[in-house]
Each structure stands twice: as structure tokens, then as C-alpha cells.
Length: 239
Ligand SMILES: N[C@@H](CCC(=O)N[C@@H](CS)C(=O)NCC(=O)O)C(=O)O
Image 1: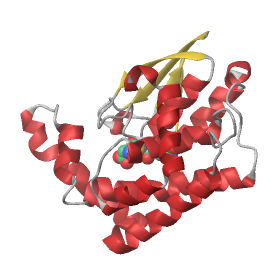
Image 2: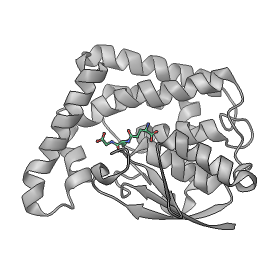
Image 3: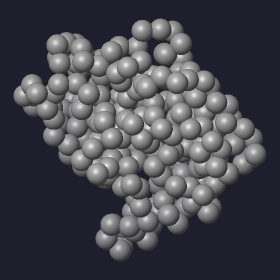
């Protein structure tokens, strides 16, 4: 493994996944599939991040934010080590990545932050370790901010039934695209697998008990794929 001085700033693991942020998990998956060493630094408040969102990386004196820009930077700076991870090589793969990161993501956020039945679990997972005073108001403040974001983006305006239907369409498209291949990029995981795993691990490894979960379970190729990626990329976490 090539020595590097990369630090990945991300949320602490919680919810039974290496990272509950699909974007943090995407970058860590990419680093692990590449031949690069890195260290992780846990951050609780994304407001301290350069773009006020996680993840970001520090490499020497340089800070790079946004998972896609981070992967671009790593490819440019470490071409040999990152060549182990196949690049996205079709318009279709790119379109699937955008569906995952700009559409399915918001459906996931809507469940995570606005579903009243899930909220107690989410609150405990994200804020349970907080000192008791901030724990009284921080979770509700963050939830309010997410509610505003979801209203602005639009996903917060759909009914539960509309939401489930949108989620099913995305998941069906994903399952059809994967088909019976081992990974989205073929026999070995590539860049699209980093995005897909970031999202799917947060669907298949985080029980919600909602109708959507029952549907996701019927897509056995996606479920098996997620397990395969977990065992391949994060054996230390899932053993
Ligand atoms: N486009 C960004 C999205 C990053 C992002 O949305 N991160 C979320 C966690 S999944 C975050 O930090 N949210 C904090 C906030 O919105 O205040 C990327 O690809 O890294």
C-alpha cells in the first residue's frame, strides 16, 4: 500500500454502517479500493467543514471538499494507486450516479429526518452520545434545518405514497442496471460502485421497518451486492 498523508474528515460510524453519510462512505470505499493509505478524523459538526458539508480530505496543506471533487483530486494526484478503481466509462453509469446522489439521496433524507416513527431511532443514533444539555435542543435544530432543505429541494413536499413510488422506481432502475453482474463495473468494483455502495449500505444495513424496506428486500441482486461490497471493502467493520 502506498504511503500518503491523506486525512478523511467524516462523521463517526453509527447505525450499523461504517458511515451513515452516503458521501463519506463513498470516499472511504474509494480510498480502500485504491492502493492508498489514509487516516480518518471524526467530525460531529459539518459547519466546520470548508463547504459546511462532509466529507472533506486534507492532503498536506490542501483541503478538498465534495465527494466527486475529492475523487477527481485523488485520481489526478495519485494516478497509479487510483487506477485500481475503474473510472466511469459510460453516459449511463454517470446518469445512475446522479440518480443515486441527487434523487435517491433526498428520498433517504426524507425518511431519515422527517418520518415520525423513525425519528426516535435517528435521534439516538446521531445524538445519543452528546452531553445532555446540547442534546436537549441540537437534534431538533438539525431536524428543522433538514426539513427546510427538504422543502426547498422539493422531496419534503411528497406524500408517503408518492415517496415510496419514487423510491421504487429508482431501486428498480438500479436493480435492472446491475442485473446479474457482480459489481456495477463488472468483475471488480469501480467508481460507480463507490457511489452505489454508499447509498445501498444505508438502505440494506440500516433497518427502517417501513414499507420501502420490504420492497428493497425483494430486489435480491441489490441486497446480495451490498453484502458482497461490505465483505470485500469493510471486512474489519462487518466481521
Ligand atoms: N455533494 C456533496 C454532498 C455532501 C453532503 O450532502 N453531506 C451531508 C452528509 S450526507 C452533510 O454534510 N450535510 C450537512 C448539512 O447539510 O448541514 C458531496 O458529494 O460530498
